[in-house]
Image (cartoon, rainbow over all chains, first blue to last red):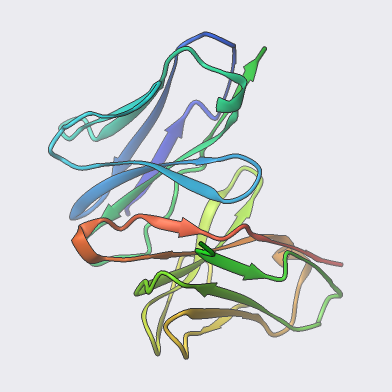
Length: 111
Length: 114
């Protein structure tokens, strides 16, 4: 059965720290893995990663996927209070839209 | 730039009542989804649609029905609401063009069933 597992479930750090969030996946006919950020309302898209192994970056956020070990990490450097959110990852495959999200990592940044 | 719009934003129902949640997207996306989000459970897929006139079951479809009569709209119905359906409901849409499969979400509907 396909599954996506995120760790840790929650994380509390001080402003300025660097954090690494983890997402492991077991997805049949894997296509991509997507990261989302959810603050108070709707999840918003961050990155899409494929088996190419190419790192994606956007400002202080970066993400990479290891296709051999079947996991992805999301790094946030020099964290700010605005980074406080739930971070979700989702596996995507070809032809099966039933895949759902991991339970998320709740990140809290203390000023 | 409306994107994905959900109505209503909040609703309180009594057990046994029925209601319909409306999702509308203006991005001409082929795929639409309904999720529910509960504490500690993440986002769970209820039903989805890969095109006008087609729907399919997701992970937790029981107690819900859906319809996609028009490409831009995806309706989620609760025929006889139960307290277990108290949740936050999110609609999303995506386009499969260019292999992106990036979902865009509505702001959510908070439903309480008493």
